[in-house]
Image (tube, rainbow, N blue to C red):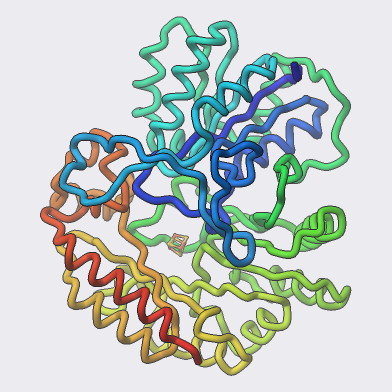
Length: 442
Ligand code: SF4
């Protein structure tokens, strides 16, 4: 039996699809790091961990640490019967979870989930813990808890005799609050980095060198999650990269920043120059889109030299832009700069947002052809309406679901903003994007 102060669990994902494209519960890992620094002992259980020992089948892995999750098909919610796709629970089979949790003794549990429509995994855990460990307090944080607080509180109310708290303050303040209630049973850990070392295998590490975004796009939750844009000191980021590279041999790093290129000369530029000076050979990936407008010749040159191999740009729309984040001329200039320094079509990808209210798929098709001609890999990003954003209100008018009633209705795979999705047309567009990606070789 392992005895710890806190058990931190990242729940299963319930969804039509989920891939490990550098997908890790960053907030929960950050909390784990802060707690260890204070001397708390913890057990970290990521129920989606694709390397978890004794999974019935090892999920396939791909380049740069990405890959599949272990999954099991489950019945989909009844109101999604019009969606011609299967529904899955991604992560450890339930018996394996039971075996793991039964060997741990803990004083409190901390849970966190990111996408709002992934809450079923969280609810299953809350129910399980309140029934099996009725005396143990539960703390819940993360993006879902922030964006859909009322929804979560309504569920929590159904367990009136349990101690369940929704964490609202920044993690550093939350840890201070915990210190007034729980005595640490261990020794302070030497560092407070997000606790990636608790994974059995570490094919990549996530970096978040800033919080928030100085822009305000009408479909984005960044401002609600982080009202201010704050960048970390570049020296601290360099040390963090060196730490993971030297002590854990990590070669792949993915940035979760919303605005990584802002203040380039004072921030990312400094980080890359310093790593080059020390001859550090690592690879960088940007699953969150970069701002193409900020990719000048000099920026492109340093990104290439510094080891970026996955560049994703937020183009969103070619016709009918939703904001003034980028013009097509600026986008083309960025592509020219990236290509001139040697980035290939496979390395440069652009996100196209589709599935907006009253979507015109012929425009998406033209956008795909536009990227094809430019030699940029197209990546389709299905629109998921986020409560509290202007586009959520638009989507409510056109959706076939009562969007405000349940976050499940905002699942991007169901094309929630469309009244009557043409699934064949959607599949045709997806196939077209895929075949363009495969044919691009320059
Ligand atoms: S630029 Fe990106 S992160 Fe910033 S508000 Fe727009 S979509 Fe959100």
